[in-house]
Amino acid sequence: MSNQLLIIFTRRPELGKVKTRLAKDTSDEVALKVYNQLVIHTHGITKDLDVDKWVFYTDEIVFDDLWDEGGFMKLIQAQGDLGIKMQEAVFKGFSAGYLEIVVIGSDIETLTSEIIKEAFEQVKTQNVLGPSEDGGYYLLGLNEPRTDVFTHKNWGTDTVLMETLQDFENEEVFLLDELNDIDYLEDIDENSALYSIVKSYK
Image (cartoon, rainbow, N blue to C red; front, side, top):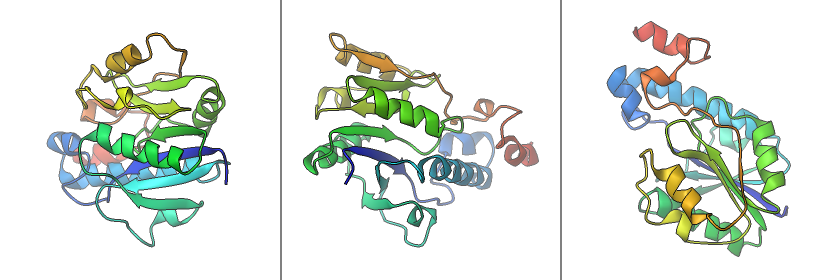
């Protein structure tokens, strides 16, 4: 067992249930194709990382999917808002004996293995956040269990990063590169590998 744990949150790729804001700009079919590509990317950058890895599904574990490759342990997310889901997952990790935990989602096209490795290096001595352009964050790194970062947040809004930084006000926090997550059509750059998917819709 490693001292470090990567927690990945993902959804079952179901038509009409993923990337719903993107679907409003395009279609459910396009949104599903985009999400599948983002999951493939996330798996690709994490499967060879030398840390333990847990992948949390929203409501039902999927067997015989790509997460079977790369040593991922499969679990179910807790019921509740995103804060409750993350807190329960992180607490489960610390209870299992992990010393440093990094949490990510599965929808950041520009996230790389190098960024995640940097997060694990920094979280040994300080808190870590990966800011996203929309005012949230794509990565959270902790080396002790805590509740403040998971409570009293307006999840899904542009205040989450600021509110979380306030929780770290008197502590060291390392900020990774700012990245862009994919929620709306305008989030997909013409140079993106996802552009060919939405181009067919346009």
